Image (cartoon, rainbow, N blue to C red):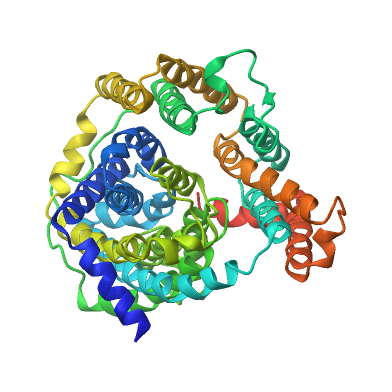
Length: 501
């Protein structure tokens, strides 16, 4: 009964006119950035974060969340039609989806992706609604030492699941934590790393870091790697799978949903890992293994269900523990903070309308996405003909105006330029900026709970081992570190990402 009452509160909040409107705006923008390769939900959420400052908190979060899971839908459209994934998690969809399109079955592939995404999003939203409250109640029992160990575990697991060099990912997290210490000491007020700049006494602005690293840096990279987009499907018809297709996609959708729901809570690229894992599973258990890579409908249904389920359940650690599972969730943490809300287990009790309204809006958003995606396929594809050189000046201008409007301080705009150039240099050196953002967001939380635990224990560092929860989390941290550094284990994990690419 309590769950039904909470869902009733959530839907009464999510169905307010302004919330439905901004949910629609969010999923529309999300689909658009999912379609356009090179922009992505991270950069879009980062650049739109400033304009949500004037919104009600629940309205702002509903719109930003819609951008994220909307991008998972949009990425599949161009992956299927022109073999150009708009989102990283849609890369595996292109393997069979584009082959189906070349065989004249683009409509069936797009409908399969839409149905799988809707079913997975709906089930994952139910999982989120059921799992979040008990986890939040458990999190309320955590002490400072437990939170320190939990944050440390999250950072290390994000390294273990990262693609590429574990050492570079660790370095990026370290740099992010270091940037998070800029400003006045949280207990003594002593300035740290401010270089006599008055604007740095309050710390580096989160929005400036996010917009620079994921907006400006990505634009610079995309200008360097602009690719020609060629249409291979001029007209989409028969927008419904055949009875045989419907029979074949039931199992992959359910298995993909389960995998995505489980992997979405992991730090790092859970939605990307989920889609590639789902594809590998479907290929291994299929009786039509030879069809994979040549137009197997299971190769579309499974991964699309997995990445959309993961997109929904990645909100679980954010809403229950205040910990971001990946860069977009780190931006959501920033949105909570900008609106004066401390993310974590207290949100459930202090802001129940926001908590349940956000969850209910995800189901509404999934319905809107189904209504948007299939009828507007022609519009989404025509967007690909817009030259990137026309898009990027407007994107940068919009981001600069939005960031400046937060505090009307030109220093924040200079910071965007600095972090944009820094992000571009890091990318050129083979370092992904995502771990840096996670370190920047979680670093102050790590430091605060470390110092608080030591103050409570009067400097006794064994408190991290004597508390059972903390000891278990530290043990898991060590295990994750082993996974991150052992070459044999890393090579085995990379098989999931590289298979059939």
